[in-house]
Length: 323
Image (cartoon, rainbow, N blue to C red; front, side, top):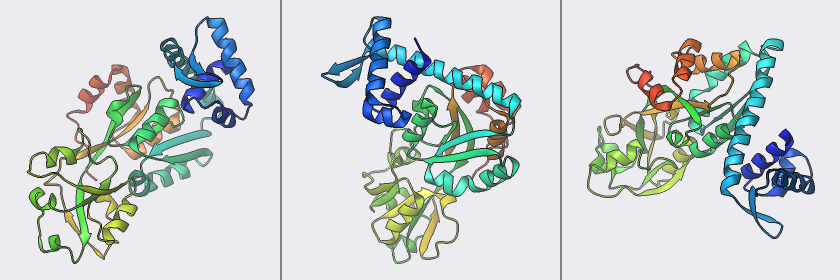
């Protein structure tokens, strides 16, 4: 059994069982990957993947357990490399952050600017996507940190630490009927088509919980991951925007903005990273730069609790900032 074989089977899964795409991502040949996967299966005496002809169709039950362990092993190998680098090149390395557009555009610029000045030899890479996509990147090890609000509770392989609370505003053109209202109610809002984030409505979201208290079904006519895109379609008159207040920076003079913090419960942005990850010193500094209460001592105390319920309880009484 070789580390290369373990890497191949994990990457095959990450590429949706597409061996050709896996070969491209690993800069190797498709026949080479297929051969190594077969050799590993022969050695273990079980099939990792089901097949239809030459195509992989699914992961077998045994294969899923093998792949889970292989992922952990590869993560620990990366951790060994990071430990060594921490002593040989403490101010050099990589930092991969996966986050949503709103966080990247409105919450992170100053933090990243300060971090780059402090660590000019750390290569910082930012990846944007939906909450599900960025959490998957962190689970796979493609991102060191995932920063998001919705959906993170679904990923049990991540340690999640709360960063700050935020709430929403409603946005519409100046000629919209709601412009006459100083304070917006849910009963008024439910009458109009809505424009909001793709993850805005699910069983856990503040929007879903709020609208469940009034008669009528909210009608989302357009959704996107980008607040800037949402504002564009609000301007076109497609619907009333419901978006993060932090994304409304006072530069949108053509739009009317009404605070909606009385309508919706605050949401909490969290930063997540894979369980068992080795955090470099500069990673701890990034955490504290983004959320000052996440000092190295606090993070290590949280990690010692080992389960997410204990971590959540630890931060339950902590007063987080509101953005």
